[in-house]
Picture 1 (cartoon, rainbow, N blue to C red):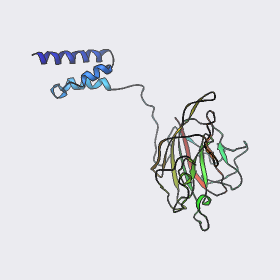
Picture 2 (spheres, helix red, strand yellow):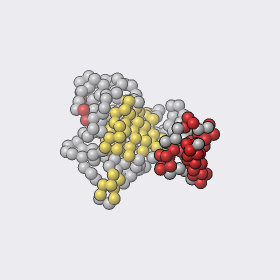
Picture 3 (cartoon, rainbow, N blue to C red):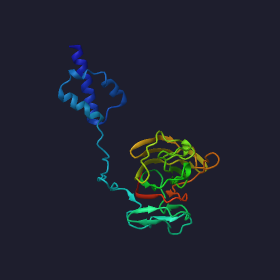
Picture 4 (cartoon, rainbow, N blue to C red):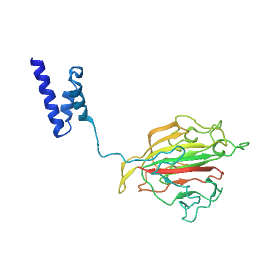
Length: 265
């Protein structure tokens, strides 16, 4: 009789708490000691409600097959380069035909007119098939830069050895990719990037930036820490900044891009 009364008292107190508010962590810990197999279905159902969260309800995003999410900003969807500019602020000089954007060698980098902080970025890229006499960093080099300064390397790394933190998918000169997921030249590659921007309070770094990167659906970086700006020579630098554009690099090679979209997080 004593065990029955204590169980009844415990359940009664938990149900009373449910009637007014969610159970506290202490009550949930106590509830964990209950032998649920001895409870009725109604009692178990009632107790399960303590850990249900009903609001706020997540907003609906339409995720259509082969299309950008409904809340994404499509950066090439208009059929023109209005979303892009040269680094000098002039019109973007690269070539756009049938939705495919191609570097115009020696014309300079381009960047988005819009600035971004935390984002989910998707882009697809392709390198030419002619590779004779091209090796290492000279085999169709480009890059995508988050906030105009943190580069994920774009390079034909298919059977093309180079330094590990400079191959395709590397956080350039900082973190090598976990694997080489390259498809052969001429095939479309995809990057999916989750970027958490660094935060600054004046000149002080409050929190570092982080990247998760998938190449052709394969994980290359799992929430890796960004050490600072991308530098070809010398160590990364920590430079205070706010939201900034996405940039695509002109490294003198006709690398092509398509289906670029970004979701602000």
